[in-house]
Picture 1 (cartoon, one colour):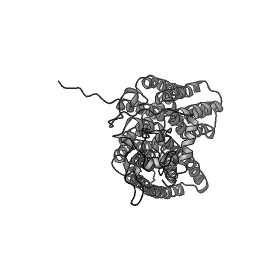
Picture 2: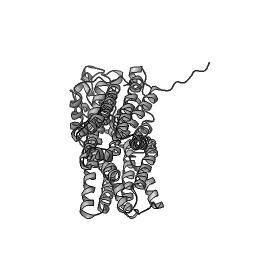
Picture 3: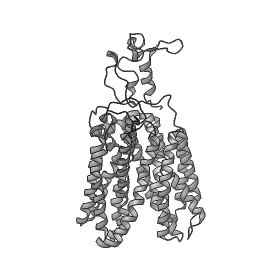
Length: 488
């Protein structure tokens, strides 16, 4: 009798997460389709309408770490369902707006908070809980959902605006967001342990961690702890440059820069859409590589190659699309957000159970870098009459990001997401995040008598210490190796 092999629920969770991420990307990109229709109907300046987009962009980044903490506190399913409902409200209520302040509130605040709750920290949370094997690959696929969302939604919404007006497009976004909510409630589970299963690729069921403390406090606490480490600043600095050289510069200014050289806006927009297409391939490939290659080397390679391509870009612009420009588009598209899977993996390596929340803060630096670059490149164009200097500065910054990535030190052994099970009175303290300095020794310290010579349970075997030193319990040694330090 043959036994039917069931699909692990982790893959169903990944599919639902992908659908939510596709929608979030499309919802967040929708205001760009509405700029001119809103300007024509209400007479608002493009700068005023762009303010709503800027608020959306900033909140999209700053919401991520708090959303990750909320998912730890209340569960993935509840947070994502609430985020989709918020997006639906923000989009649907715009059909009744009369002032620009209402636009900023609805598209800027509501949609920004909703989509930010389904940003890349959501990806880190899902993959960290549900996958052990194929974790990098799944991270790449889910990240690619962002590009897929823009490819799916923007052409559809543009046609709706042209045929039926901008209100029809806003209502379609609201309906699409609400349509995903039942799917989330049905299939998006919080932990494999809820189903009595181990994560995909693991052999033992990992108990769901007990949520303690407020979500905001946990997010801020994770930042406070991570900020004491060298690794956090290297990751955040590199990712800020990533945002500056993608969303902030190319995503915002490629079309007007191409137009400056005589290329039509329609052609330039089509080239930018091709970037999104190849981004899907590049991000999935990056996830596959992250499972097999040192993430530090991947980041250094991605940033260095991106910088080289940006240094060449000013010489490729023309009034028509040349083969050299198509080569740039393919190459740059493959590299667009390929940095995400290795960055997520490094946050998990350095910060353990808090990795998803810490990645939320690293992602916030990405959006801050994007906002600075978007404004800075505009100022360069206004003052000098061209974007050439902006491309060169971005290329140099990417070279700097490659250096930052190479300065990340490899940990002797990875941080475990769950602390060791208590085995005796001396181990009975409440576990904290793997990055807390106190995790290394516990209340009695690694050199106390109970840690080195006292009787132990099977899980607390005495391991030989360094030459000439006292023996050290193996579980304490593991905790010490897993804790973060300011030099991490």
